[in-house]
Figure (cartoon, helix red, strand yellow):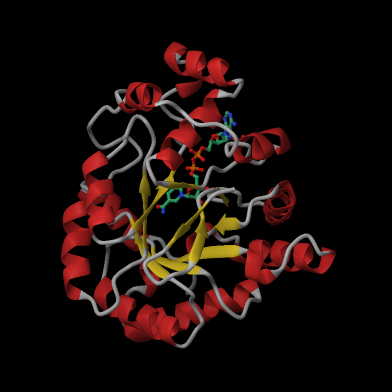
Length: 289
Ligand code: NDP
């Protein structure tokens, strides 16, 4: 596995495991255990996924089994917009995430969306970071102009920005802006999130067979080679293992360019942040009373 170093010196794995939409607690716990046994060390959840407790259970179980230590793991969660009303609601939500997971600290905590009063919420995250409850803090779904304003304004700049990044929505300019501010890009939906049909693409199939790899491995590797952390999700053991077996081959510059040329150059169908109805929908999602 490869690692990157965040702006605060923390080591972050370049590959991880996401659990969005794994709502069945037992399935989530078992998938995370399987992933960690397969070698993953980064797990990505969020308060709004409703499975922080299952991730915490899995983490304690693998540590008890001696698969790895807590220090070797990199556990991420995210603050939901309902809790981004003000400093106090954010502060309470950080503690709620820690309690649900049964962990003393999280390795990374992200503002899930640039919505509500995210500056006040960020100040609560800065304080929790300084208290050692969060080893790194970052943002998610921050477009380049929002990220720029944010980095130029806050006291502690975000260390990570998790956004949709795959060959069909490559966002090269946004990635450049992140690098300018020493913000590590992290790809959600690195396999396209079940959209775009990359697995049927003949060019990708050709590159995959040239390396004795699968299309999924090739597109994950493409992101890693351009400096982007990937967090594919799967509840199938064979795919969990396949998606982590990407550290023993290198795409050529020509292959990288061919994959980059798949970029549609516009916001993908899953991203509706520019749609007021989508924003109102997010603002209305409650994860507690
Ligand atoms: P992914 O790109 O990881 O795609 C997941 C889909 O691909 C699932 O349908 C999965 O099916 C399938 N799949 C997985 N591996 C393979 C494979 N090797 N071959 C073929 N199909 C495969 O999309 P996600 O949307 O799940 O994103 C990944 C993670 O990113 C999430 O779990 C979450 O942690 C994070 N995320 C963050 C967001 C944010 O706003 N910050 C938004 C969305 C996601 P199956 O499970 O059946 O194998």
